[in-house]
Image (cartoon, rainbow, N blue to C red; front, side):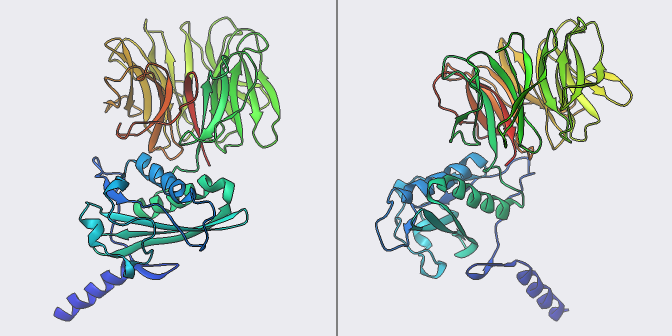
Length: 436
């Protein structure tokens, strides 16, 4: 029996081993992202070390560490420590055998991320090593090569590797946001990285452009524009740049959402007189009328499998969220608390976010597809609206006027780690979270 216990112990130890560029290391820390309360790890991220033996691009030392530090902070799983507390700077060793881990444990660090870089012409090579400070062991080591002027993209890739190793789930750091901005004085559609950087305009209509929505493959975007009169629906191909009108019927053509397969979309149209929900194909042809009612029916959101749609209707006398089963046509009311519930958004993990009005302010809630287990995510911080899920369903973007002006924020789906990510002039609203 003793030998069996010893043998099992060795099998368990070897099961924890994995290979990285430096050789065999130990994986000791794992973050359970499905835990109701995920504790944050204190992580030290010193400025990166120039390994090239020259003084080229010295600002990269702090820029590189800053990007990965912000990524890990926004993930909600890490607490990057203040660099002022570090006993060792950017010129410290990268290899575990040369690191004095006591210098890091004494300041409360549980993890240490060491990085170095080399610049050759317009190319940049970055190396990162993640250590478990308590055990003095390397958890992960990675190298990445890219263009110097795209160093943020390079660091987002490495941040994704860290999240994957620590949580066994893909990171969000290469995803993108689309939103409505008023920097020019008009409402135009913009796109940016998930963290608000690299903002670029998608429209220059010099009119009112609203409600952008990424296609599931991230190659297209639909939005409404008033540039030719009423709120017509347009589709822009982000690969070719081509733009075409999908629906310009009389009346409303608003609030389009993509089906999960990307072959059709649902939207509200009123060419028949009453605002009802229809599906159209990518040529704008009407496929089916999904909802027909004397009330106003808007804001459709497909379920992950495409079999159901959540939408808003005032058929009960006030805006409430309803559920449509597409195959049978059955409709059920989901929200009963409060007199104003709108903007449903259905996550890939099968939970619905929505906006509810409480004590005169708008806040964000989530619920199960049957209306149960309602959870409030925002409170006491202005108006919070326009919820949309990250592609993996583990984060949410939304707009808030908590600073006096609307900007885009992101948070974990438990409401923690609420961080502002847009800082442009004017307002930023109506986010849509696209894939990589």
